[in-house]
Image 1 (spheres, rainbow, N blue to C red):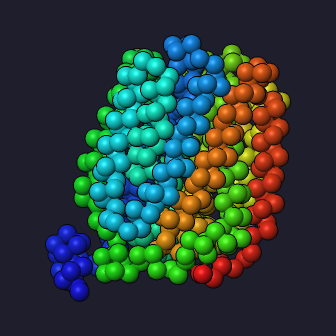
Image 2 (cartoon, rainbow, N blue to C red):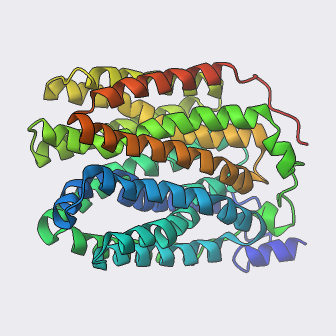
Image 3 (spheres, one colour):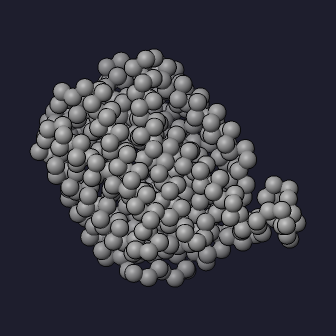
Length: 413
C-alpha cells in the first residue's frame, strides 16, 4: 500500500515523499489561488467591463447584456452538481484539463460570435462548465482534500483568488479592451487562461486519502439525507443571498460609477481598492477562521455588505465610494472562503463536491435574479437606488438565517 501511495505521489517511495502531502499540498494551494484568480477574475469581475461596449456594439439594452451573466450563473447551476459528482468519483486532473479547454474555447467563441444567440450558447455551456471544473468549486475541493488541520485557513488563502481576480485580472482585461477592443480581448483572455491552467494542471496529484481509497464519498451522507438537512438549506439560502448581492454589485458598480461621470481610470482604481480590501479580508479570515465560530464571521460579512448598499444608495462623492468599498471589500472577500469552510466543517470533505454542487443551483438562481434585477431597475428608473434598498433587505435576511444555524454539525444520514 505504501508503494502504491508513493507511486501516485510522483513515483517515489514513502521514504522519499511525505505521504501526508505536507509539502506538496502547498503547491496545490498555490494552484488553487491561480486558477480562481484567472477564472473568477475573467468572469464575475471583468464582466462589468464588457457591459457598455457590448451594449453599444450589439445594440442591446443593459438588461439584455446582463443576461449574459445570468446565463453564466444558470450554466454553473446546471453543471456544478454534475462536475461535483465527477470530482467525487474520478481523478481531479483530467476534469481540470478538459474544463480549462472548454473555458478557453468558450471565451474565444464569444469574442468571435456575430449574434447574441451564439454568444449566449457559448456562455451557457462551455464557459459555465469550464468555470466549474477549473475554477472556484474545483479549487476549494482540492484544498479541502489536501488540508485537514488548518483547513479553514487554507480555504481562506485559496479564496484570495476571488479577490486577486479583481486586483490582477480586472485591470489587465480593462487594458486589453481599451487597446484591442472587446472582441479581441475575449479571445486573448480565453487562450491565455487555457494555456496557464493547462501548464499548471498537468502535475496535479490526487490527495493521499484518495489514493489509498479513503475519502471517496464516505462521510455517511446520502443525497436524500443532505436534502432533508435543515443546516444544508440554511447555509445554502443565506450564502446564496450574499453571493447574489455581491455578484450584482460587481456587475453594477462600474456602470454605476461611469454613469455618475467618473472616468474609467477612476473606476478601475475604485475596483482595485475594493479587491485589495477583499484580499485583506481573506487574510484576516485566514488568521482567525480556525479559532472563531464561522457563523459569526458570516454574519459580520453580511452586515458589511448592508453598509455598502446603504452608502451607495445616497450617491456619495468619489472619496466616500473609495472609503466604503475599502470597508465593504472585507465582506466581499469573506463570503466565499467562509462558504467553503462552513460546508466542509458541517458536512466533511469526502462528499464536498456533491454537496457544493447541490447548493450551486440555489446560489446561481439568486445570483441570476439579482443581476437581472439590477439591469432591469436601471432600464426602468435610470439609477440603482431601488436595487441598493432591496439588497439591504436581502443582507438582513442572510444575517437572520445564519443566526438561526445550530452550533453543532448535523449527523450524517
